[in-house]
Length: 276
Ligand SMILES: Nc1ncnc2c1ncn2[C@@H]1O[C@H](COP(=O)(O)OP(=O)(O)O)[C@@H](O)[C@H]1O
Ligand SMILES: [Mg+2]
Image (tube, rainbow, N blue to C red; front, side, top):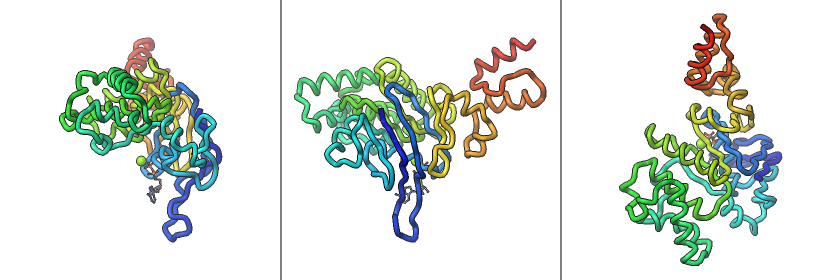
């Protein structure tokens, strides 16, 4: 479990441009959860993400990963292995000139024996459905494929927690779908814990839990239906609700017997068909 207690973070403390980016965050991420984090630009999502594995250290409060504090320098390497990060730009994350070498990079740095590395690389590439690209040069891959290689790199380190900071924002719809399917698959089949930061609200519909950040705080935290169904509140936090949720609200306002927390087209169709 990742436990965040009373976490505040200040950039440029004591300077004129000092800014409180996180303001007293309390949050627990349990093993096996799939959490989507939403929030307008500047709400603190990336700053929070960088606290999960100690890339940033709290100004106040604590971040504990399986009982290890990110403030303890001795535990940091272990925490970095437990919590894998994937960032926005697929091109900045791949260091090797061959896909499988890139995936091997993490376990090599951890000092795993060669036979073990081989096994981990093969398993990781299979888990993200990239086995056939093992010998490819990364620059030949699409954005979605590159992000899947980045995810494989984390898996090869046997990271338990995957924290992804807008990994789909630079991808086309197909690449986004690939990455989302990969994450869902890893969560369901491999039991990976996923914290997925995104500005695409439709990626939150099928999460287990949705968190909305606002001004460095957790503004909303709950099941997608409860969070996204609160259309006015979600809008006030700078997020456009899913199109079907907006439609459901409009229909309900006009007096139709439609629940206001409909999330997708399937559900809308079923509801409308049952009305007549
Ligand atoms: N390296 C930095 N130095 C100074 N301020 C920063 C830095 N990174 C982010 N900020 C500020 O911290 C706040 C939170 O930013 P960020 O965590 O990047 O939000 P988000 O990822 O939700 O867009 C914003 O006001 C942003 O301008
Ligand atoms: Mg960000």
